[in-house]
Image 1 (tube, helix red, strand yellow):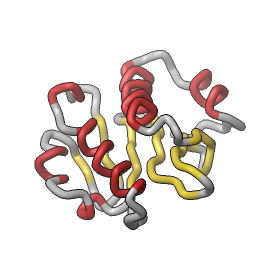
Image 2 (cartoon, rainbow, N blue to C red; image 1 turned 90 degrees about the horizontal axis):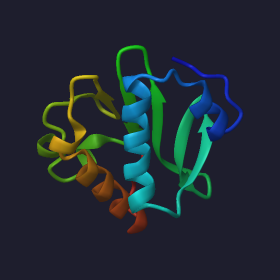
Image 3 (spheres, rainbow, N blue to C red; image 1 turned 180 degrees about the horizontal axis):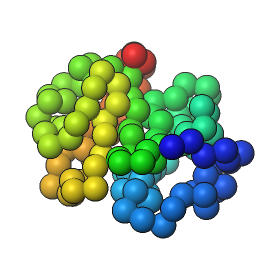
Length: 125
């Protein structure tokens, strides 16, 4: 779904108060807990996280899942193990209602991606 928000606060206010908002806020917290230096802005009608016009993640609530967009997933070591249980493609991790994120490696995946960005490695698609 696309939300016509001007900033992150407005985006969060527009979200329906359901499981998608809960999952989105949990992923958002994972990002900020490990990368407090990231800015949160709206780009392409989604929340984006990064610094100085370099964005590492985008986050959006869809109709049937929450999308976490990241550069090519294959660049993250052990991504297939960390993301067991998720439906994902080249650069999008789909977080469905039934997944228990705390039982997965998503947080470690986020940490590894941020570590790559901090080391100056390419995290783009």
